[in-house]
Image (cartoon, rainbow, N blue to C red):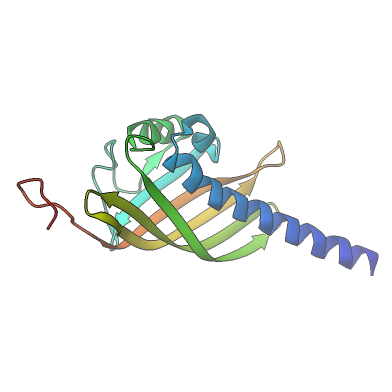
Length: 164
């Protein structure tokens, strides 16, 4: 029973550590913790943003088909991203399904991005993250690949810059 208990405890700890990475992603990007954000990814990670299955060509940095690659490019992406206090938004996550496989794991997580403008708060986008994780040599779980699948997004402004 001892080995079984240790295995179950390790699985719970691993799942919590992965949930912490998923949560940290939103906190770090929303509040401009750029180095911390980049450290959530492996050195050779892939980050891919899609809208309904199609690669978005510009995500603040040019994105080729298949996504941006490498921690340095991901750091450039987060450097171009808006954050508080210049712009307040929240990346909210829920419903994570995590599957462990030794020092690797996958997760599927629902997300919403909440934004605000002069008219108040609104849901800017929602969708699903599909992630591959690796436990690194330092013991930390990191994204090896993150796909941000935007399923719906609000286009809040017309050509005159006013909210529709």
